Image 1 (cartoon, one colour):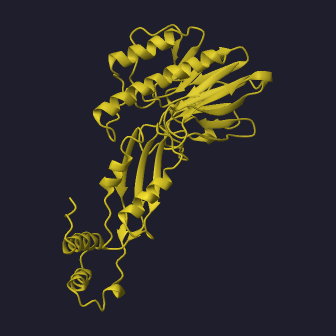
Image 2 (image 1 turned 90 degrees about the vertical axis):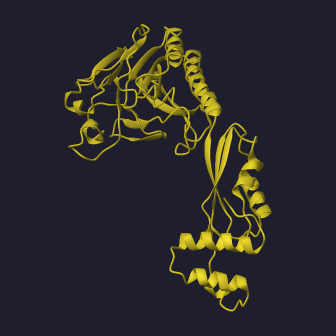
Image 3 (image 1 turned 45 degrees about the vertical axis):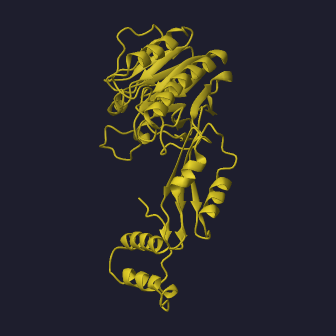
Length: 352
């Protein structure tokens, strides 16, 4: 028997924190299509159960067209059971007329589904660990929950792994964290956050996908399947040893070499720049426009303010820099004033 463990799809997310409305709408459609691609993958690879460990939708009231699309994909695959935890984002979501293969879990105790020698138990209530039914050690046992890990015995909203050790669990299928992570639960089983199938923002970088579980030969094995249409990437470029805008552009181009055009990219400039070095992040954004699905450039570099450079400078420039550096202003304000002042002295446009 094969199963897919997925979670945190957050379908119908707004997605406008980074993207303009048109790109956000396109990305929302892509997330729906990734769900359909995953279900098609399941059908083509003999998967019997898709276990969704929470947050199928981003809200309890998804747009009707998004909801109808998801439910129709499920209904079109009657040979696959969909076992769905609500999670914390779409916690109150309940379709009016779900397909027959759409199944849920109780918010009071554990709901158990049996597939031959495979047992799947799950609960919406993380405080129900005390009433997890006894699991047959001769079965392959999967337990599913949604929430953050906790070491506290009094935090009844989190998941304390110690409550699930020694209970004949082969695979603890978790949702809530958006990055893949799998570790030993005890001598018998593992716990696993499958992550999200698609990254949505720049806090969700790296490969995204789902976990394929196989029970062939009476043993449970699992493998992460990268599946996202696009990766989200944070790229840092150190400009400390660079001398011009053109140098920065070359460094950014080199740092982005090999990244697929499909991806979303944020470039962050860091390090220390000489006060009179011209740098224009907007020009770099213009250089990158059209090369990726989405790109932006953040300037988090600092000025290299070394008093010894200006101690003996008798020019207006030297007097200006010394005056600002001796002003007692916060360093961030000093940097901004010096950068603006030096650009003005050079006859350049003032940064907005």
